[in-house]
Image (cartoon, rainbow over all chains, first blue to last red; front, top):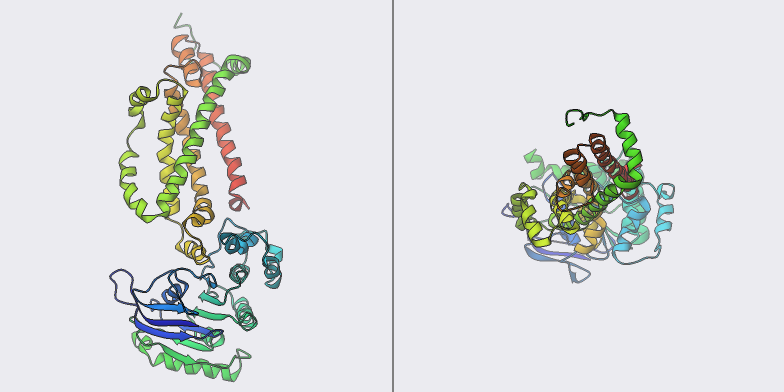
Length: 245
Length: 224
């Protein structure tokens, strides 16, 4: 469980992005975070990861206060954060090497599972966007995390690759009982990926606006899914985001 | 006698002198200079590159040391020659130290800049994997800075050879600087002087090729 308890956060002397903000993410849940640029989506991910520390309040994961990057929390960034000087295999092994693990530890299994074994000796600039994203996912999952945080991971991919990877993440989330929190700009992606959707607004964010979305959509063209997207659009549209636009 | 000396000899006669004197006299001067340049460059890389990376990696160090670097970098280091001779004598060590001091700042500034301008996403993504400062240096900052270090070395080769000439003008019997000065200004043997200059060109040429070769081996990702 991720327990965010009354956090306040601001960058230097700017106005707070979060002010006495609290929320709970239960173990194994899939969340999407949506909101306008600058609302604090990425900041919230960094706070949960332990890359940033709240000015006030605490974040606890499984009862332990987060004040540095946690061993079992994986983060995938928008540009994937792959090291250009390491091959696909070396990038996947990176977290293991940092932790002093010399063995394979499932690297080959993830290379095969994510269909990147053929490109394992290539460098990131030799890969397609989808292959890069798969490498980033493999690098995260090889560490056997219980929380997977993703910051707009599919934003630069073409539609078929994006949908393919969204399905993959949903499958992996169920299979590995992962807690997934995904930051996105698109309502459809938020509705497809998140069983709960956190709507952040222009700062300061004080009370979380959470949209329940319990059903896993079977199909993106399904009437129910389209109706869900309309409902989210309406909820968000009624907020400050729409007023500001 | 002076007027009869051809100050611009034919390239072929220079080449003949080069080929005939390299296995004996000129070769000894060449290898003496090569040793001085290579050791100076290696020392500069080994000491200033990690230092530059550390300064770039740790913001606090950058804020403290940058003003001193900016103060000392533009000072022509040859002004320290008398001090170096006084403190370190007139041997090989003093000559290499002089070249080292000049190269030190070039490589320091380039590696510091490369480390400072690293994409924040790369740093964050590796930090999120649990890397602390030592692992960040090893897995992120050092490899990211390697291309800049090679650029620094390439720039340094030209500077090192120019400084080498000045350094070999005093208190030595071996070195291309000494050979060129002796044959040109004392013996007025211009073909031999040009053979020395040619040897200096070959020295730089070889070092540039060696640097390119090493860069292709070490920075493989940039050449695939």
